[in-house]
Length: 188
Image (cartoon, rainbow, N blue to C red; front, side, top):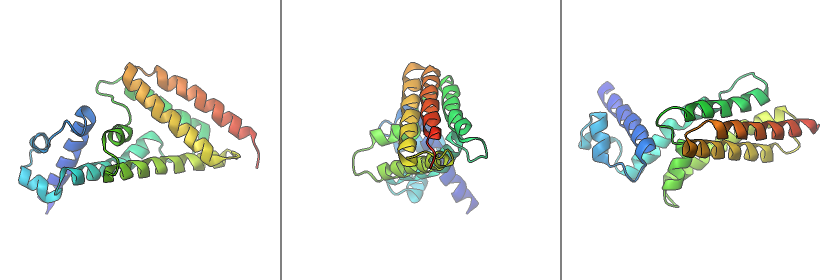
């Protein structure tokens, strides 16, 4: 079964890269199976439909993306949040940066597609991590602060992709810092 597991992972990795680079709709299963060096029958054995593959890819990327964007650490909450924008800014200067893969997928998928729920769940987990940081700062409304920061993160990633520059991430970092500092002024 090692070969089967290996083939499944190759398909997931190939599909993730191709979906991110070209979009979900523009990437056919023939291209994915060729990129993964897996026959179409093998691909369909693991993923009965392209929709199943999309959902599996998003789940496959979920924790890795969260840990890249906002790793769990003992750093000061302000430094952790600033680090998100710094990572986005650095990533934006590399070829092939297209913003957040979850926002990209979520915007492309039609309403009701099961992949959109995976995207919403991913964003909810990011907000939960941010809410924990906001609570550590004794913010009066940690939920609102988490929504503000995730909105800045998504906007920064999108604008960085459009501009091909890390400048939007630096601008969003400055706004997020102001929001965190203001929230930290409020004591429970």
